[in-house]
Amino acid sequence: MTPPVFLVARREYLAYVGAWGFWASLLTAPLLLAALIFAPLLLARAEPPRALVVLADRPSDAARVLAAYEERARTDARNEVFAFLSAAAPAEKDAALAAFDAAPNRAAALAAARAHVAQAAPRALGAFPDPSPRYSVVAAPAPDIEALRPHLSGEQSLPDSAGLFGALNIRRDSEGAPLIEYWSVNLQHSEPADMARGVMRREMQREALAARGVSSEEADALDALEPQIAQFDPRPGASAGAVTAREQAPFIAAAGFAFVLWMFVFSIASMLLSSV
Image (cartoon, rainbow, N blue to C red):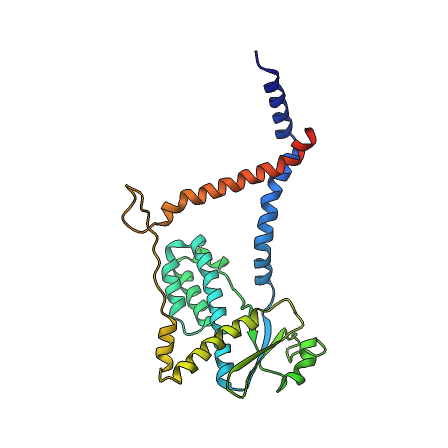
């Protein structure tokens, strides 16, 4: 004879599993989580490039900051092409990326990768990405920050009727140290200033090393030094080589199942508490 407690548990389990609210909450939780993670990325890709102006006491400072933004746009485009090829044409991924890397600039790199896909995998060409840069450095419509204020506040537009998102003003003090001023009405957005800070930090290092007789090429080589990292498993019977992604897969799977269990618990916790 089945104990009454099991009959009650069976009845409660079937009641919860058969409720539409249980399945709705179970499916809604991962969808909301995915929306919170991927929605900002999709919105950032959908919006047009943000127009920036770079003013600098030294033309070389402005040129280095501009080069950093161009490199960022090229890297973002390469990542998007890599993700697309990994899903749509994995066999042509390496060759297309090699053509991308061999091109002299971002536009030529996208054209080279597209041409390779058109020749080797024409069926995937229709969905080939056309990424736009996150930022677009434009010519300054005014010679200084004071004259740029109407453009930055939105009172005036650029010659192409677009709005000016922000302005970087890179000054040098009496000792030659750079001072970065970032002007924008978007008070919570500091990424342009952070990118310029990284560029000028490397420039300060080059200048300090140059004062000690180290050339800019040697300074760049020193800055590129980075140790290699490999992880090993000390347990008996483990592979003698470095730990691979396949060996880390059990941990990733366990984390995924733990997350699914967490969703199950929290999705039915309110119903369980109500029943109790």
